[in-house]
Image (cartoon, rainbow, N blue to C red; front, side, top):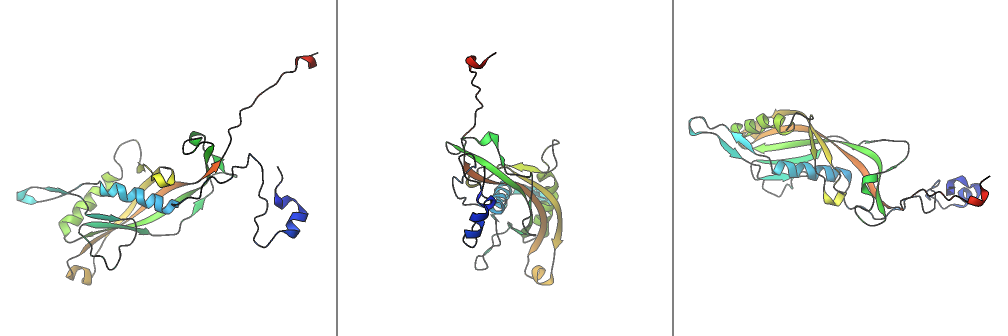
Length: 231
């Protein structure tokens, strides 16, 4: 089905910035809704929710070990005016947000037909590979060591896969997020140690589909046989 960009007359008269080569018609999946959450924040929110539910175990020697959870997990860099509750974690971008092509053309995800609204389907255009820096903020070494000791098993909970598959944010159509722990290191500076702060910096790679909700009508092939035309 022809698009505006295939018509030389349309190209010569189109206003500056007008998208060309955009097909029109009932089978071109027009946008059904404008999203409110991008892939980056969808992945960060899923990772933050996972970390909020995580439990760690701090060695206590003769008095016994003690389990604890993070007080706060931020899906962004904490506000400078806000006092941090320890232990906490923050998630920030460690690199850009490369969108990898998954096919030559967008793909309609068949399992999403009518799943969100009648007459709609999710349209996958790319795969986002997001590198996050996750900082754990602690006030003592035993707490930081407990978090560092737990991370490898936390991100590989079973023998079926390396990494995690996390349930996605409802605001992003619940698209699953694949999270993999890449590395972690202890970050000690004179100022931080003097201020009784211990920091563990980790890198987590998250992959999530880039999708849009579009209008669609499922096409059902139908064959009509005209008996009068049979030999």
